[in-house]
Image (tube, rainbow, N blue to C red; front, side, top):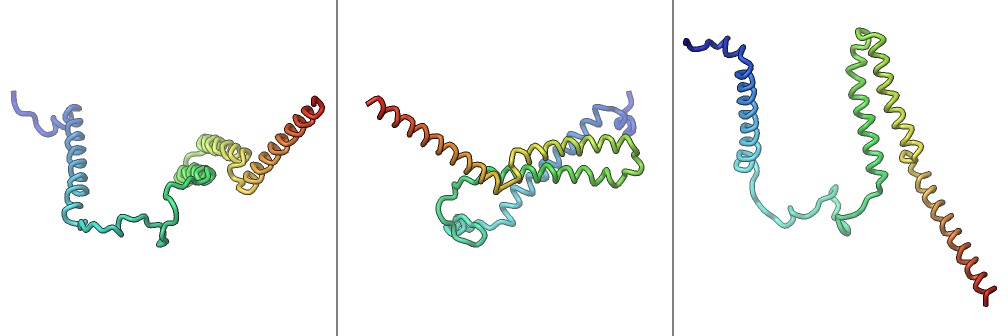
Length: 164
């Protein structure tokens, strides 16, 4: 049996998978070698200093603990921004070829935008986009609860006076 030619090897599916594996392994080893080994040895000087280990925030010295809890609305607004940023990323390529795609593509994109609009309306109705109102609504709810608690307390005191 004669040795297989290169063209015959390329037509073999297993050989193609082997080539993909070899190139992937080479790429992973190349990245690890460059980033980890060469980066530590050649480009990053190791000069420990207590000042380098301190927390740095925009040029200002830190005040208090670094473990401060942030308001959840910051994260909510960030997630909403990411969702609509991704929407724009998907709409730009579609807009570039809209004339070639026709009505079916327009329908599909309108469904996509509609789903995102439903999510936006839901976030809006929940009050996640309205900073002042959500704080005021929370304060009003707390004030209402306090008034109800005081009314219950007065009713209990009145009953105790009548019973005595």
